Structures are given as C-alpha cells and as structure tokens.
Image 1 (cartoon, rainbow, N blue to C red):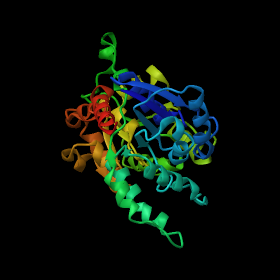
Image 2: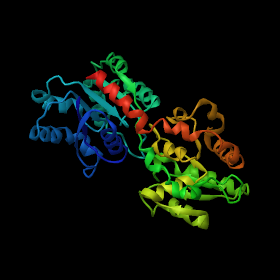
Image 3: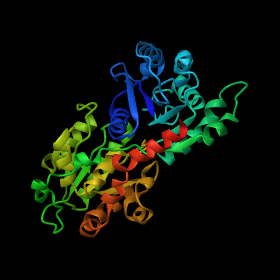
Image 4: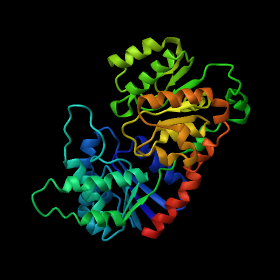
Length: 369
C-alpha cells in the first residue's frame, strides 16, 4: 500500500512521528513536508496551497492520505480533487488550537480552531494521540459552533466522534538504550549514596508550569531534603527573570541546565531518579515516557493525558493534585526510591516504542484504505 503523508510543520513531535513511522512501516510512505520556519500560524493558513502545488509537481498514485493537524485538510482536498479523487484521508491530531491554553493576555484567533474542525470533518478517520485529547476536543466543539448565529450544525460533532480513534505517537525509545560497555555507569543508586537527581525535561514555557516546579523545589529545601537537578528543557527565553532567579538560587545543585542533545540527553535520563511534570497543557507526554523508559520514577499531574501513561496501580504514588500534593508525592518518592525503582515504569513506557506501535499504525491505515 502506498501512503502520502502530509506534514506542513515538520518539527518536534510532528516530525518525530512522521519520520519514525516511515522508518518502521511495512507500507510505502511518501513524505511531503514543510519546515517550521514560517511559524505554525502561517503553516495552518497557507500550507494547503503550497503542498497542493508540490503534489502537482510530482503526481503519483496513492492508496491513502495522512495529514497532521497543522494542515487545512479541507482546502487541500479541494485543491487536489482532480489528482486524488476520493482518496481516503486520515487526520492525525498532535494538538489542537481550540483547547490549547493561551498565555495571559492573548485572545484566541478562532480561525485556527475552525481549521481543526473542518479538517476533522473532511477526514475519513481522525486519530488523536490520547483519549484525553479526543475527549477534550469533542467536548470543546459545541462552544466553537455555538458562537455562530445559525446553522451551527451541532449534529456533525457526533459524526466526528464516530470516526475518532486513539493512536499514541510512536517513539524511538531504542535510541535511549545504553551500550553494553557503559551499562555499569548508568546503574541506579539504590543505596542512597548520593543525593537524588530530579529531572525536568520539558520546555521552559508557560504551559509547562515551571513556577509550580520551582515552588515545589523550594518546599523540599525547606524540609531539609538534599537533592540535585537536571533541567534539560529547551530555553525559550533564558533571560526571563524568574528563570534566571531560579538558576541563581539552585546554584551547584543544578548539575545540568539547558537543552541536551543526543547521547548527552540519554545519559542524563539514565542518571536521574525522578522525573516531574507540572504542565497545564499536555496532549500526550513524550518526554515523560522517555524518562520512564530510562528508569525514572514519574511524578505527574492527575489530569490531562498523564493518567493514561501509567498503570492504574501506580496512580496513588505517582499522580498529584495541586502544589501541596506535589511536594508530598515528590518527597515520598525520594524517600522511597529503592522500592519505587523495583516497579516496571520502563515496561509501561516500552509499549510506545515504534516496534510495538508501527504494526498498529499499519493495520489501522490499511483498514481505512
């Protein structure tokens, strides 16, 4: 089967899923992509026109079209109907512009949620990266359609729901495996011979909640807890005042500070003991899965997509509600690290490796085609 994969914003998780699937699929997948250089807003507005033109320059036969959420799929299909006819289309939704939280003071441009909505209408199947994401999008649609005077077409929400599926993003977890010659360097500290290493591997942006994280670390310090920090998230604004103040306060406790590429990222994940998220927005949680695969104990919000990442038996120890509970769960995890290390967080993460998920993608896409 031959698949055309359209990725108008080939960056981050969008690029990782597209490239990972192409590398592991049994199908013949052709990628038509644009870089992220133009910004996501311009890609959502203009990529359909550009990708349609690119397709005309290399017309081929395809059995299925897969597009990501940054594409105005309805416009693209209208511009290429003479080439593609009634080719079945799958929309893969990494994130959506209707429920994504905005920074303070910014109003939502409703043109972008509308593109997500009409793209979902135009697709034969809509795949969300988590059950949380699917539910959040469907529950928000009445508010979008209810803004209009008449012809709200609310019954079409049921049409979208009927063709909505959950398909987690595949992750190249094998790249995080440690070479046999270096495994001794990455064994966990089960004897408490060094301070626990807390990991932050999220972006340093408003939607990831860094203020809550810093507040929790200060609370640990007030309790007399000795710890170290590996802060590996990309710095959007390294000169932001709160960010600089935290760096100064942490001092030598911050063993790593800033984006770590490749093998360096892998090594810090294996050295870390506990991974923490304080996100206010998360539709899946790739960085948490990567940390769990490397043996980190996860301390995560009891909301968003996070409960889906863990077996139910781990929820009580690993999921928190609010600041006070975060401090309690984090402190308890540090005190109980030897026992928590025996739990199979790596196994919970391994189900998202491409070796497991690529056959699921192949089967679903074949059924749509």
